[in-house]
Amino acid sequence: MRIVELILDEDQEFNGIDAISIVENPAIQSNFVALKDQQEIKLAEVSKDKRLLLGPILIPNKPILRNGKEEDYYIYFSKETVEKASQMYLKEGNQGNATLEHQYSLKGLTLVESWIVQDEVHDKSRLYESTKEVPVGTWMGAIRVDSDEVWKDYVKEGVVKGFSIEGYFADKSERPKEAIDDFLSQLEAAEAEYLLSEIEKAINEEEVELESFNDYPDGVANNAKKGIELNEKINNRCATDVGKIRATQLAQKKNITVSTIKRMYSYLSRAEDMYRKNENDSEACANISYLLWGGLAALGWSRNKLRELGELELETIVVDDDFAIIDDRLAYSSVEKAEEMARNIGCEGYHMHELDGKEWFMPCFQHTLKKPCTAGYEMYGFKIKNGKRVPNCIPIRR
Image (tube, helix red, strand yellow):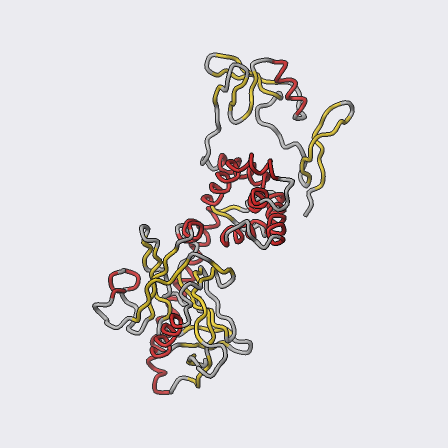
C-alpha cells in the first residue's frame, strides 16, 4: 500500500488549514483533507468552568488511511509540516473558524491556546490522562466554547469527541525507503487501535440508539421544514447555527436524545402562547422558532414521550371550585359541563374521579383517550357527521 507525505506548498493558491471542526466520526475527502479518522484526536479535557476543549489537533508521522478511487493508501504529516500548519493557521487569523462535522459553520468557538509539544516529560499535554502520550511535534490546542447550545447539545452530550482539520495540502513523493520499517511499526499499532475504536464506536452507537428516538410524527418533521423555509426567506435571522442544525435533524427524522426532548418540551411549552399570537405572521421569529422546534406536533409528542420515559410527571391539581386538572386532563365540578366538553372533543359521556375529598367529572367514558384518527391520518378540527360533532381526519402529507 502506498505511503504518501502531505506538505504545505506555498506556491498553491489554496494552502493551509482553514478551520478546526468538532466531530464524532472521521472521513477524508480528496485533496481537501478532513482528518477525522485519527482515533488519537480526542478531546483530552473538558473544563466545565472555563468551557475549554483541549486536545491534539494534528499528530506528526501518524499513518492515516485514505480511501482513493482506484486504491487505498496512507498519508502522514511530518513534524515540520505540522508546526508550519499551526503557525499559518494563526497567521491567517483563522482561530475563530469552526465547523461541526465539516458541514455547518459554528459561531462562538475560538482557539485560545495553541502549542507544539516540545518535551516528552514536562509539556502541558502531560497533565491530562488522554494526551500524556502524544508524541513530540504534536499540535495541541484549546478551544473555548461560548455558545450555550454547542456546549449543551454537542459537548456535554458527548456527541463530538475530537478535533479535525480542514485545509488544502499537496502530495509529496512517497515516503523514503529507509523510513518504511519505522512507519510500519506505527501502522501495526494504529490498525490495532483502529479495530478497538471500531468496537468502541459500535458499543457507543448501540447506547445512543437505546437513548435516542425518532418516532415523532410526520407533523414534527413538516413543521421543521416549514420553519427552515420561512427562516431562509428572511436571511436566517430567527435561529442560531445549532438551532438550524437541530431543525434539519428533525426535518430528516433523525434520532434525538432524551435531553434534547426535554429542551424541546421546555421551550415549546413556555413559548406556546407567543407562538399562537404570531402564527399567522410568516416573518415573526416567535412563529419561525417554534416551527423549527417542530411546532405544536412536537409539543404533544415530547410531553407524551417524557411521560412514557418517566421524565415528566402528570399534573394533578384543583384549580378552583369549578375546575381541576387530573393526570393533565381537565375535570369539571358538574356532569353537564363534562358531557358538553365530551361532545366538543368528539367522545361521549363522562367518568368520575375523587380529588381532595370532592367528586370531579371528566369528559368521555374512558380516562385514556384513543387517538382521534387512524394511522396515516391526522386531526384537522371537527366536522358534523350524522348530526354529531366528530374529529375531521385528513391524510398526513408526506
